[in-house]
Image 1 (tube, rainbow, N blue to C red):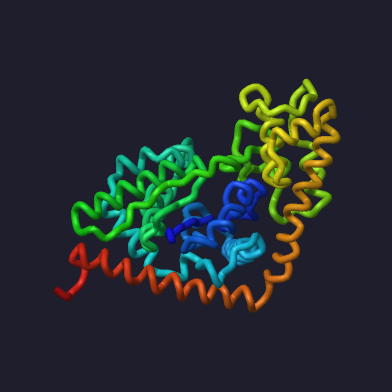
Image 2 (spheres, rainbow, N blue to C red):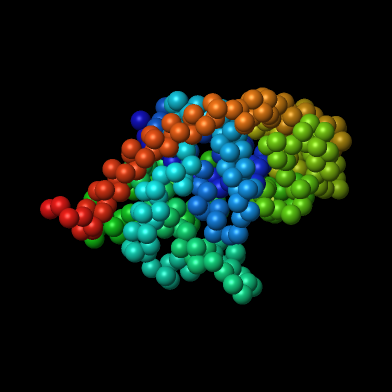
Length: 328
């Protein structure tokens, strides 16, 4: 069995893109692998957060993981800040990383561009991300294209540490899903669907009600020729909608093209909206059942205990390898 690690920031409700591109695959992976699903709240505070809203978002994300099908008795679901080894190993990873390689991170350049005051954590959070992964002897990290650069840095830091001190860390493999890895915005198919987009019409939230979902799907951009055909280069908007439809319905893109041949975008969008609603309904039901329950707290307590047991052992080995202990 392989060990898989994934972390998501609690910075707003997840989108349909998060579910189709990541969480849906997690449900399948947990049956045959050791899976760690981490709510990376310490990454969220690299930018200012309202404390009350952050606390609410953390709990909401935990409930969404379970509602989406993560079984906390099979997998380890936990909150990053409840496992102190993350920040401790994060500091060690900072000590083996170089400023130049951190400054080259695309996300740091994008998020700091044009700003007068930038948190130093925006520069140094990749070593913390590396610590998140390395603490659990992770074999595989499933990520989107936008995180590939950070995962490559994680591999570099692990190899650098192992070579300089001792062979402590497992070198993780980056895995990008072939289908659904990058669901695009409903209003601009050149941009990834993101909960941080200021335009709520650009994404479907995992907690949107049925009326809102249908309204957003029907307002999604398409093109002028009215033909339901997958052509990512020439018809990026309709191609994105076909990808979403395929992932929600289980039908191939070719089947959908045949089904809607000679039909307009209106009929296509109506059917797509219904498929999205049907996909998210059981998630909504389970979410509202668990969000304010003691069951959720029980699972998070269980996850923190399990994660601490593994992470503390890895941290101790790393500290000992560097000479950070009194024992010989």
